[in-house]
Image 1 (tube, helix red, strand yellow):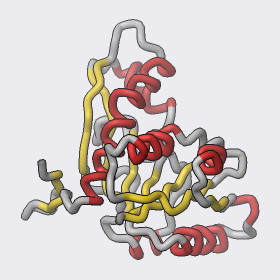
Image 2 (cartoon, one colour):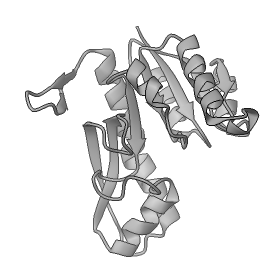
Image 3 (cartoon, rainbow, N blue to C red):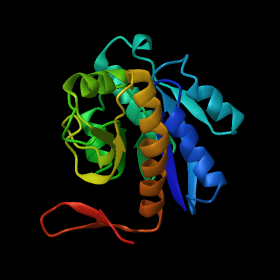
Amino acid sequence: MLKVVVLVSGGGTNFQAIIDSIKDKKITDTEIVGVIASNPRAYALERAKNNNIPSKVVYSKDYASREEKNKALIDAVNSFGPDLVVLAGFLTILPEELIDLYPNRIVNIHPSLIPSFCGDGFYGLKVHERALERGVKVTGATVHFVDKGTDTGPILLQKAVYILPDDTPEVLQKRVMQDAEWVILPAVINAIAHDKVKQNANGSFYIED
């Protein structure tokens, strides 16, 4: 049984997609053992409560220094004893120590086709605003392992989404969520649960059929 802890900051739509995929058996042999929110007002905490999933809050304003907050976050993650850490709209930089503790066991979902529209400052609606400004015809989402850079870890799975002429950032964001994010994040979690993620000789990763 793969034990997963999910880190969130806001509404938790990707968190809900994981919950639903477990219920629908699109993800099997997997249990969400806990949720950690960086914001005490995150609606994702309500989703956790509604599904009887234990939750913790690590809010930066509750700590005197970044070091104290980082330690609290590491302690919170470790307290759940996870096999996999999933960043589902988590808008806080992870401490390097946490990344060292969970090598290739932290995954993130990003709302673009990396390496496009990623890195510092690219999150949430900003990603879709820039995609529309640039005039690209195809966007999508990417699930990747987390390393010590921003959106630089090894790519696991991507899914493309076409941009339509009358798209607004909000409309595009919703389509990318529904057609890509909510599909590939559960798919990656299920692949990890069944040891389907393999590494090529060149260091890249792929998912076995």
